[in-house]
Length: 287
Image (cartoon, rainbow, N blue to C red; front, side):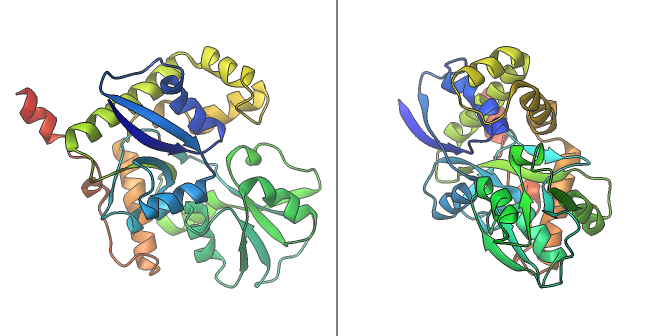
């Protein structure tokens, strides 16, 4: 039995897409997973260090991982007309060098924010602490992610949607690539393919059994929102578009990579098709 270390965030969509495996609904005779839940920036950093076999990551960090990690086609979260929100106190005017709290240097929303607000003074905080930092005037504004976008203090308002920044930069009708998964290239190809198949199956089964799985997550106090908010959040970020990357989603990731290259965030421009696990091996083996 090969036991692989897999990291996911503690937010509801990642838990929902993974826990069909944790609950034993998806398994393999030769592969098992040891899972750990960490905030997304910590996961990005661990992926950069090669500390996990498989990990949830921000799409914005992937070009820095290309040499050591492949992208998986499953477990993805995109925004379509929605996404992270830049919030501030109502009626507060932001100067060009306003102080802002972001959830991590390598997140997709941080990348887009830095392009749109090059003079802002950035501090990084756990995403759960960002709203409080704004309320306590520790910062002038903050970017909310995950379930935080669903409900925040009534004294706050949205200054700008990260979705709007994305639309202005890519100039196409494409969804916003937020989170995906990567796997170490050093793993045997047959193992990597099997892992992708298992994780894909887990997302499919989760969606097919959405009421039951949601109830089980709630009963075990694994999520931070109530039933109604969970339903809303999963509809946004853990849906049929999360099962496997579509051509439109591939185009969106390529657009993100190009924006990062054009603004000198990345040293090379990547094609997402070169970042995925090659499946030709399976075709040859089964032919």
